[in-house]
Length: 134
Image (tube, rainbow, N blue to C red; front, top):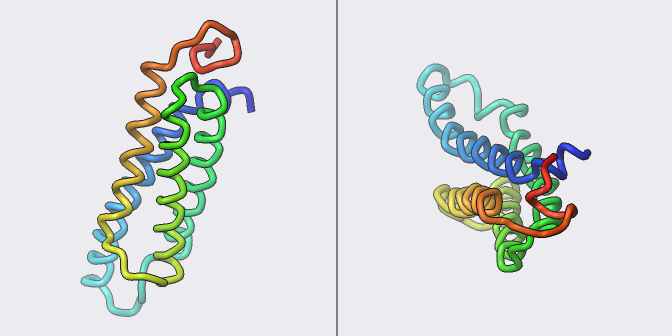
């Protein structure tokens, strides 16, 4: 748990980047699978469940980053990006509204950038914030 607190920006940017790769790879893998065989109706269950794993990891990383950052405007942007990403993923699973596939890239890239920005520019004078990674 201490590692998560100290490295939340690294974990968050890594999880968001892996999520982005997962989002990009899914249509490509689905196309490759569809052209190879017509017996399967879509990606395997384990592949589809990675969305939820990334959401859980991202939630933890955002929670600790927003708890320790000194950049006040960053906090709402991270949570907005997370909730937009969550809404898009849930909508995709439940097929409620037609949303272009490209929409998922916006909050995912935003989370990567916000975590990296916080990692680079967060400064404080106490032991309870982002620069204390000892």
